[in-house]
View 1: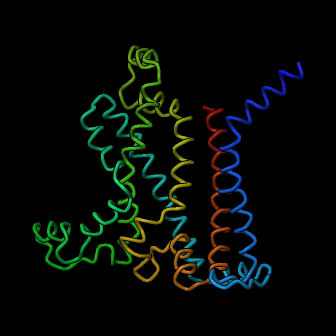
View 2 (view 1 turned 135 degrees about the horizontal axis):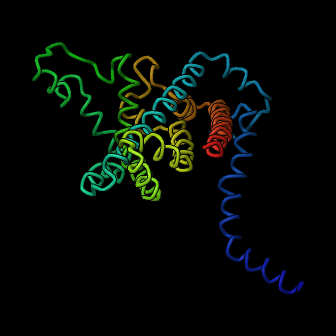
View 3 (view 1 turned 90 degrees about the horizontal axis):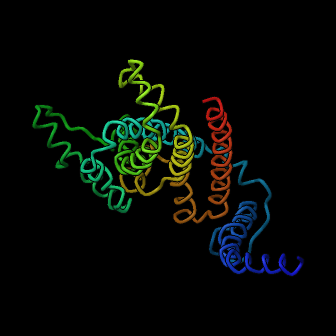
Length: 290
C-alpha cells in the first residue's frame, strides 16, 4: 500500500512538477521580489538598493495622479463589465442559432489588441477619421475631438474594449444557453409565457454559473487593461483615462522610479484580489439562491 502511495506521488510530481516549478518561478517568487522592491528606493538601473519601508505607499496615496488613476481604473472596469455582460447575454439569446452573425461578431476577438487599438485610433481621428467624416455627412460641421475630448474619452475607450471582446462573451453565453434543457421552455410555453418572460425567468437565472465566470473574468481583465488605452488616448486628455497600469508603465520606464511603480502594482494586485473575492462571494450566494 505504501509503495502504491509513493508511486502515485512520483507520478503526480512527474506530470505536475514542471508546471508547478514554472509557476513558482514566474509567479510566486517574482511576486515576493516585487513586494520587496516596493519597499526600497530602486530606480531599475543602479545596483545599490536602500530599504525605505512603506515610504512609497505613503507617497502613492498622497499622489493625486495615482488616486485619479485608481478611480479611472474602477470606472472603466465597472462600466465595461456591466455593459459587456448585458450585451453578451442579449446577443446570445437573440442569435444563438444564427452561426453567420455569431462568426461576424466573434471576428474581432482573433485580432491582437494592438491592431484593434490602432484601428480605432484611426477611426477616432478628429479631422480625417471615418467617424468625423460620417458626422459631417449628416450635417454636423463642428470638429469633434472624440478620444481627445475629456467627456468622450472614457466612454469611447469602454466602447472600444466592448467591441473587441463582445464576441468572446457572446460565445460563452451561447454555450450556456445551449446547456439549458428545452423542457423548461416547453413547459413555459404551455403555461402561456411570452419570449420575454422565458428569458427573464428561465434563461437569466439558469445562466448564473456562466455569469459568475464572465463577471469575474471581465473584472480582472479590465482592471489590468493597457494596450487600448495606451494607444488610443495615452491616458489623456489630462489624465482623464489614465489607469494604474499606464501609471506603472510611465513611472517605471519613463521616470525610472521602478520601486514606486512596483508599489502601485502591488496596490493594483490587492485591488484585483479584494474585488475578485467579494465578487465570488456575492455571485456564489446568488447561484445558491437561484
